[in-house]
Image 1 (cartoon, rainbow, N blue to C red):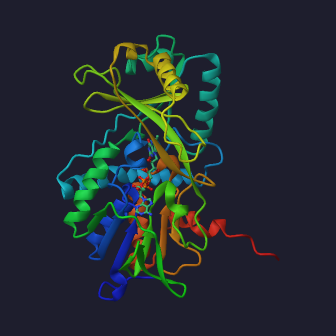
Image 2 (image 1 turned 180 degrees about the vertical axis):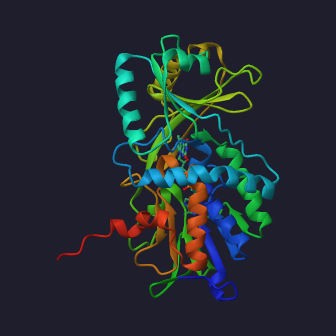
Image 3 (image 1 turned 180 degrees about the horizontal axis):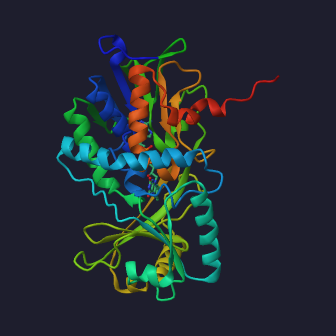
Length: 382
Ligand SMILES: Cc1cc2nc3c(=O)[nH]c(=O)nc-3n(C[C@H](O)[C@H](O)[C@H](O)COP(=O)(O)OP(=O)(O)OC[C@H]3O[C@@H](n4cnc5c(N)ncnc54)[C@H](O)[C@@H]3O)c2cc1C
């Protein structure tokens, strides 16, 4: 399917104003399409606000993710140019930092796990460096003095996801897109098997193509013949306030059972729990205790830092932990861009470009071909 800018196929409705919906909307509006984005709350306030903003393509690579890793690496490599373009278009900073990421081991068991992950990640061709405990503490002097070893990943950085969402909002509107907040999409308007708009309660908004980017809520949109297999994966997080003039950390650091993300303003983000509890929206004592205990073990100096904020969010977890990018099965004109799980910030540039290209020209970027909704279609009997 392709879009002729002079044809009526150029009216786009986007369901969901997280970083994924906003970035796709920006790309389509830049190309001259008429874009309306519908967000039931305020844009950028769900998972895209809750995230830590790590661009952890290498250190998060786990066995079984051989297909996903190249997508993550490609998107990580797109972030510097994407950030620069977004900052220029919006006039707002996005807080991209490229000091790299360290994974630290404190005990002998941690070292063994680290070594096995390092061997696997290196076998995928990822750029990583093994550090002795002393070398790790040279880079980050406030790490636990017992730090036994670490891995340094020079290309895994971070972006401030809250700033990036705010910048995308401005860039989308400057490109001519319209954002409708406080508006829930209640269903799809159909003519046969083709989508012709979105339902907003009693009202119908006509559209030629619709993008479903509703994050963890994507499968709940009424009327989908094949709902995408996306579920909420709850994460609790908190942040501490460091002295920005004398921060305890410069790199993103993964310790045993926590990660620590230092922002330029001295905020130290601490994450995160991973919980299969549906849309349970409580912070729990156990969750916070586990995060603080793991943080204190990794970086003992945090003891005196004030707690700044605590929050939780819902990762849009997909059945195979990879995103769903492509035309929906059973609904002509419906594009799926969801299921980004723990990598949605990292995968924003490639998602935006590849999804927009599919909608504008019909071209399927080779790098996303494996992530279409067809992979979940029931196998046909021989
Ligand atoms: C604790 C935590 C830590 C994370 N850390 C990282 C990280 O370090 N790096 C990384 O790359 N990723 C991280 N992620 C993952 C990342 O946040 C997500 O993958 C990404 O934000 C998904 O973006 P989205 O736009 O798909 O979803 P969301 O940001 O959740 O946006 C979806 C939007 O759709 C709206 N919506 C839903 N239904 C409707 C409807 N019917 N009508 C209108 N609007 C609707 C919702 O209100 C919501 O605003 C983390 C996630 C969590 C929870």
